[in-house]
Image 1 (cartoon, rainbow, N blue to C red):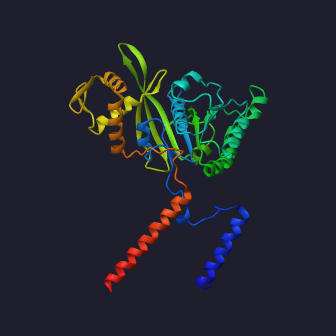
Image 2: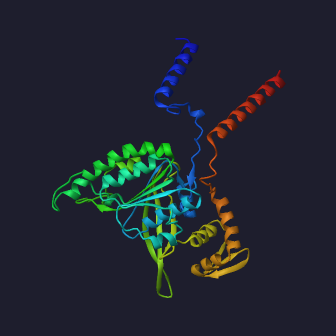
Image 3: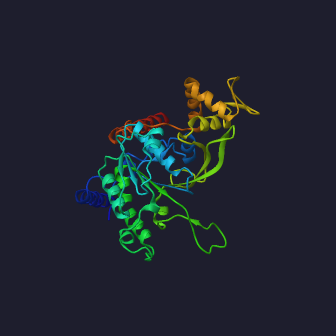
Length: 366
């Protein structure tokens, strides 16, 4: 078959596919407008830097897991707050029936506009999530938690009945359907998960997560959240120092660790992580217990330096700008995402300019 005939046959096949399955069902990679990863900030600068692309990628599945009271829900609620701040719509599937509206509001979540569901069964919760995602009107969905998505057969059965692999099959079936819709609608799906221990494991890590292996495979990013130490001042416990490890990452190199302060009743301390990141890049000088910025002392001890930054928003903003530049974190708004057609036009213009420059060089060579 000649080259022209091959091209004609390919064009005919592409037209047939588009007619049967809709525009965009198949395309050349160079024509695809959204090859750049669009992200939404996590609500933590340190976590944005650890993920490597400045936040959670849109149209992907994120798993947040860890021991009890480690800060998993706090991490997810900060993401919800960031989406809402940028004009997005958020949904929260509260399978554990443990949502605390006052705490969520303290973290910056707009309770009035948050779509909340407290399903009775796992099937109901996942079906609600799928319906919301398929609508294309939701920017982020949080499922809290996978371990609490109890299959209907288990709820309707007797207390001692064995239901081997039932939840794993439910998750596997649901994720096969959800993953395509999540990608098409550019929704961020965060699944919070708990930790269980395998019985009889002599070597290696005995810890595992409920719900089978499907979620591990479908997740673009997996975050392990663990408490490192308590934050104390004058004998009072103010919160916990938490390590968030990126154990899986399909959009940037994995295994980076973000250390954040989760303060009781307030969530992630953004002034605390800013202080640490600025000190690491020598934007803030640390000598002994003293912190200094531009030769001016801002506080003795970490908690005092954090308080100073919170009380001086102009200095806070100045340091934050420098930290963003140092770590290459670019903040993008949901509402400001560029139109795919404009991106395509820009690429065509760049291609034309490149061809013109090549022709000019060849003319000069002659």
